[in-house]
Structures are given as C-alpha cells and as structure tokens.
Amino acid sequence: MLKLYLFISLMCLVRSDTDEPCPSFTRLSFHSAVVGTGLNVKLMLYTRKNLTCAQAVSPTDLGSLNVTKKTTFIVHGFRPTGSPPVWIGDLVEGLLFVEDMNVVVVDWNRGATTVIYSHAAGKSKNVAVVLKEFIDQMLANGASLDNIYMIGVSLGAHIAGFVGEMYDGQLGRITALGYREPLGNIDFYPNGGADQPGCPQTIFGGLQYFKCDHQRSMYLYLSSLRENCTITAYPCDSYRDYRNGKCVSCLTPQKESCPLLGYYADHWKDYLKEKDPPMTKAFFDTAEEKPFCMYHYFVDILTWNKNIRRGDITIKLRDKAGNITESKINHEPATFQKYHQVSLLARFNQDLDKVAAISLMFSTGSIVGPKYKLRILRMKLRSLAHPERPQLCRYDLVLMENVETVFQPILCPKLQM
Image (cartoon, rainbow, N blue to C red; front, side, top):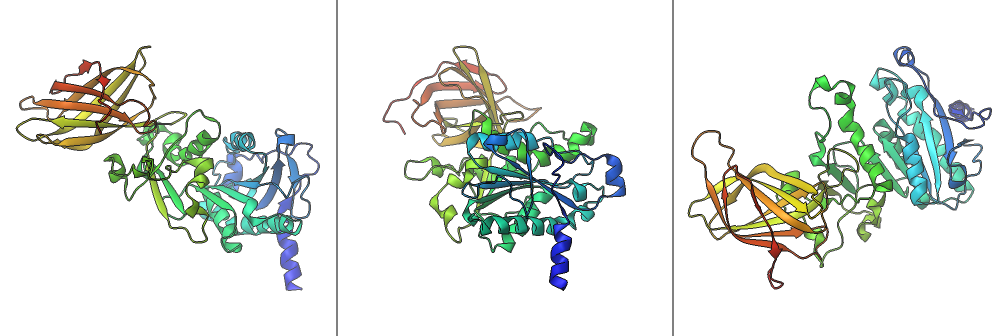
C-alpha cells in the first residue's frame, strides 16, 4: 500500500494542462518567489510538426511523441524572480532546426521559483523522479536510452544528473550548463571558466553582474545551433597552457579534429562513445558578443636582439576591404632571445580570408625608464583554423616600444615550417 501511495503522490506532481490549446511556460511573479511555490512539473512536447504550439504530455500520456526518434529534454534551473527563461524558445527552435527530434521542455517553475536556493534544490530530486516515470513509459513503448538526451541548465543540470544516475549512466547524453568542477567525459572552459568577456566586472553592472557569466554557457551552446561559426575547443591541462599555445596538437594531420563546443561535441573522437571514456578538459576563448567565435593564429617571431627582451605583442590584421581585427597577446610577458623563435597564440574575433596588411606593437609595460627595440629577423603568421591557407611572412623588422609598425606581408617559402 505504501508503494501505491508514493506512486500516486508523485504522479500528482505532473500537470497536463489539457485545457490549454497551446501550453506555455509557467509565468510567475517575484511575489511568488517571496512566498514560495509548491512543486508542479509541466511537460511540453515540441516537434517539427508543432514548432510553435506545444503539446502537453505526461507519464500517462506521451501524446504524439515518436519513440523511434531522439528525444531531448530541456531542464531549467533556479528561478528567483519567477519569470520564464528567456532562452527557452531559441533553444527549442535551434534544436529542431538541426535535427528532426522530440523536444520536451520540463517546466518546474512552480518549485524552482523561490528566493531561497536550498528550497528549490530540495525539490530537484522529485523532478528527476517525474522524468524517470516519463522515460520509463517511453521505454515501455519502444524507445531506447541511447536516443535520450538531457540538457540541464544550472540546477537543471543537477536534475539531469539525477536522472542519469537512476539509469546507471546509460542515457545517450547529458549536457550540463552551469558547473565549474570537471564532471563529464569532456568539460568545456570558456575563457578559463571564470569571468566572461562582455559581462559586467563590478556590482555597478546591476542584475547582469550576478547572472551574465552564469548564463553565458547557454548562449554559447545556442551559438552552436544557428550561428555561422563553429567554436573549437582545445584539450589541455590548464588555461595557461592553452593560452601559451601548447594545446593545439588536435589540429595536426596526425590527430583527429579538435572538439566542438555545444550540440556537436559528441562528434569528437570515438572514445567518447566508449563505456568508460576518460575525462577531458577543453579550453577556448570567446568574443564579447554573439556569435562569440574567435579565430586562432600562431605568430612566430624570430629575434636577434643581443639582450633578452620581455614584453607583450599586439597584432592587427587588415584586408583589402578595410576590415580590421586585433589581438592583444598580453596574458603574460613573452621572452624574446637572440635567434630563438617564439610562437604566440593570437585570437581574433574576425576571420579575414586575405590579409593585406599587418601591424605589430611591442610593449614592456614599463611606464618609466628607457624605451626598447625589438629586432625581428622573421615574423610568420599561420592560421590554425585554416592550415591550408598560405603562411604570411615579413623579414628584418625593428619595433620601437609602444609604436605600431604597419607592413605588407609576403608569402612564406613553401618549404618553410
């Protein structure tokens, strides 16, 4: 009798909303967050046939869900103001744009809406139980665990993890957006995983100061669905090693391609599909605004100064149309020694196909004291994203400190590595 009681009580958590012709995400107010909300889980199915009008589904009614197709669950997190997540519609549309699938939006706003995080967190396992009941019904109708994909955002990532644990890690895939410590088969760290470019750096940025960095993971994921750029990540032990250009071996012909951020991350290497694949950290940088892509180049500099020089390099590229893109390589001073080549990883927010002019500027960062020169025997620019492009060179340059030097590059000799 106890088991029957538990089953009934959990089923009551699911709201079908059959009276709504097009169920919509629950919209609550800040007042609801203050007084608190009881848990009520609402499941809404979207497909390419009903892209703009959801269908209410539940563990007892799968609706028109096609169990032979992939089913992607979207699980939101903590909602301290009660408003719907602004990204929900874009994510549904983007997923259905790239693949014909079932998309199930898990609306547990009644439960997630509270000003006390622990109250919402305490309800998360109950949400996972409801999702398990729904998936169990799918399996009973012929679905496969391999075809189930869960995207969890913030506290929703924990819910997705609970569901995965209930199936002993046999779900097809889980994407968790909003946790810093390594947990997955591959963990992506944009800009090192801390402060994100374009987000407010102080409390004077208002509400965005508290949520911008955290929400960026979702917008980076969205960029993998509809934007005209692909964000490449680089497996690496640390962000510092990545910035120092030590982690680009996945781009060599002898290696497989580098992992891609977002929806297509599971295309990287067969070992991600193994039973117990190793954990991998992957780092990358982003631009401040959409579509966030950065384009990586190596700037190889061979110097002939008698004395060692330490400093930063700023490089600008310009094409014939006048488009200019800039990279400041200043995360740590580079060390330039006589007849020693230094390879610096430059990151640009535009990809200029044909570079007509290059400028370099050297700086030691010193405010007082003498100005130094950096004598360059050879500068070479090579694209990591497009290694088939000709490498560009320039010889016998003298950079005066803090003075921008502009020049036209020439093609490097083909035998030059």
